[in-house]
Image (cartoon, rainbow, N blue to C red):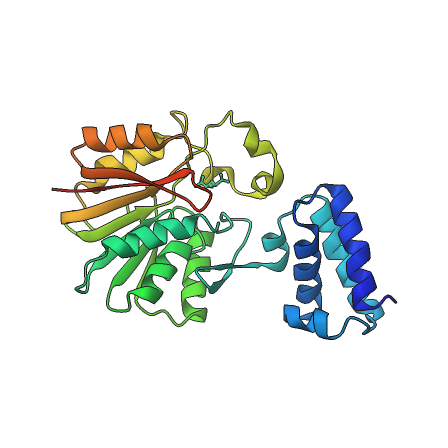
Length: 280
Ligand code: GLN
């Protein structure tokens, strides 16, 4: 059996030729997953030989990755806002750019205990990040998929975040009438169904219902922005993640609906990514 260093080298070559954009990282993360060890272990013990069982398990996960499956679905986890989260193919894999939405939401969060709503919560990433930073706030996450609600609830339990609650249903449906929130955040589906990027890379394995929306990707944003007016407190904020070409359209629709101080902010790559507005 090969040693750690040789197994990694061979895996990197294989991943490179399969078209992975991050072959060294993929190889290291997958080997750590098989060995159940932290990344430092690979650097500390490059000469340690793999057992036959470990080698076979590594080959099996490499085969899945070279067939295109996202690393996070193979390992079943992904870190978001420094929180280790369980992920599954029934939800989107949390993206680093979505941390921008969390930063901006924290900026708008009131300093008094408040209620916050995350629509289309998936793994619970945004809701849990906000709950971890705002222990005095109550964060509600909603998802139409029962699997997502279960996953988010499990993530909350693993992280000991007791100020969260996850509900099952479409957008505002499971929220009792009359409930008001200081902040409503959402990373809804926003990709146009004809977008060629849907047939490339990791998104091919993610649930279409979490990615694609009608009206060139704007239908769910419009729906949420329309109804959110009935669920926001006075001076409450609504924040959306959206596509890099949708800033203007989202600003327009929010202004038409009466939101004030509507602005678009950029992600870490400098692309328009989050638009926010305040209810009067
Ligand atoms: N930002 C994701 C992507 O482009 C899509 C996320 C979403 O549709 N909410 O892959």
